[in-house]
Image 1 (cartoon, helix red, strand yellow):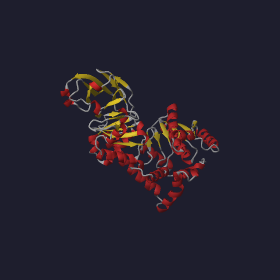
Image 2 (tube, helix red, strand yellow; image 1 turned 90 degrees about the vertical axis):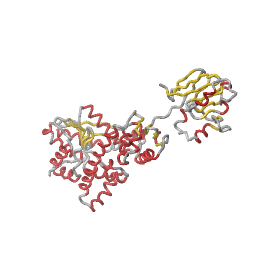
Image 3 (cartoon, one colour; image 1 turned 120 degrees about the vertical axis):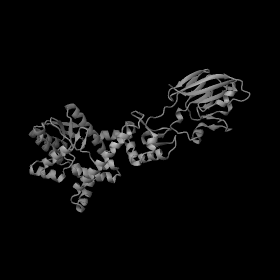
Image 4 (spheres, one colour; image 1 turned 60 degrees about the horizontal axis):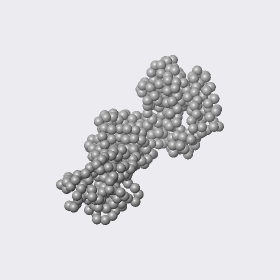
Length: 460
């Protein structure tokens, strides 16, 4: 099958092009992109395509870039295709983002493609990844421990992006260019083995091909099977996920627990991955973290949590699993009159105080959100604030002084909750660690003549 016929088969198979599409082609001057531009240009009349070409200067090869730009410009003039050049600061972005240059180049490159496509009204972005690139990606991801989604390889179509050469081998591209007497540029960075992909391409793949000369075609078949199975599982995940999310923001997602706890790990792993990918603030959760989250879902108890990099927390609640990068707010300082009430906005709760006279019978009605205090020993107004270094109190029933920090540790109160727990003080003395423990010194006794009731409610 001639190369143009093979490319056309790929276009139809994956519904890549339609009549009157405006296509932005990524043109580096290398053999793959030059071949792609030629082939799409030959289909220009048949599909009534409006083709534009874009060269991106990464700022990494100043000695080679000018000649590449001139070559690409000349090629586009010869083919009658409008030519665009854009520059990106890969080194600066890499330093700013804390990633390597290859990752930085990739992120910036895709952003520029999207931006230019939007600017010129292109509904397709054609990139020149080929079957060899696909096979290399497959083996790279195996070496990095990817799951099946990673092993599904480079998608032929993703949004506006199409890859018409994804089923074409590099040797076929070179043969086409040779037969067409078409020159192309050589990127010297592709010859350096200190890049992972280049090492694999130059050192490993030739050895694999000695064992299996048909390696690229064989690997492509495996990838296609993996991709089809992955797409099927993703349909199941999509249907499942729609029923699982009661709440989602840019920094948090809640998932109903009961379905998760009873879900097969194969689906659960994908559900968690998709849920995480849907929340900007959860980027950075990797495969090992997914396994930790699964263990929390399956084996953890209510209130258990795990702490992940970049300030991400995963909390197993009573009915939901919470994944969040929101940082708990430290409670401010408030004055509470008796009688009176105050909204503690950082904690989202209302605290009320009132006199009960000598209603000692109310002592038996105490719950964790309510507290009865000996008003005879209280100085008003009360102060409500978050914890401070050096805080201490005399926990009721404990019998001696204890540092608040030690109390939190002993009670296994999660560290991300500690700053939002209301600490109630009379003067300089703690009388209540809200909803946890009161101070022994302010307990109601048989001699108490006047009682104060404190109550915490969710703020509405």
